[in-house]
Image (cartoon, rainbow, N blue to C red):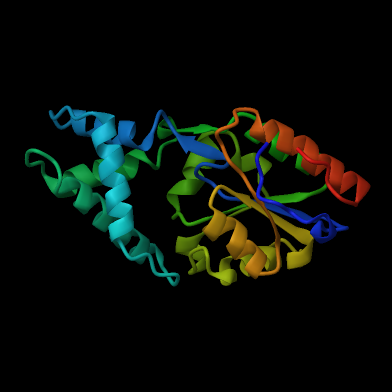
Length: 241
């Protein structure tokens, strides 16, 4: 398991809650973001390689300004802006609003996602020893149906999405909101995610512990489960994964 350094002295003596990022931590698109775009576009009679969409999505995400303060309506507008930029790169015209709606709904379905190996095992292991678990994600209400469809929702105490909380990571407010709702102090809470800036640095700035999850290791979450279980039980420095 690959983590950014977590100084032993900073490991919480009492671990009460563990927060997880969603995409690229507990779940990932199946088989990829680009492939989902390609599948939806093919239904409109246009066959374009997934690789094309993968590159255009990266450009679109970089071109959009993602404000920290947000609402459900704002998240819809931002996703429409991203998709519009991808749409403008298509080699032929499609009915944009119908295509956008199909893309938006595709990512609301569990069919477009898969749980990371060991995700359910990790969540269940933490619940078994009384650790509260939650997701903190820069998503909207669609995430709930995805987690439910993948069988992860029953293993989580709460799901906090930016569209409902009103703040996007890296804002400290979304982390502190999660801590309050879980009845845990920031020092008793660990956040795990794949982004060094929006997950690790942001969580630490809010006073939480943080681990950097890198999903390139297919056994990462299974090993993480053992690390967290050991740390919570013994109440001292976690072993190196």
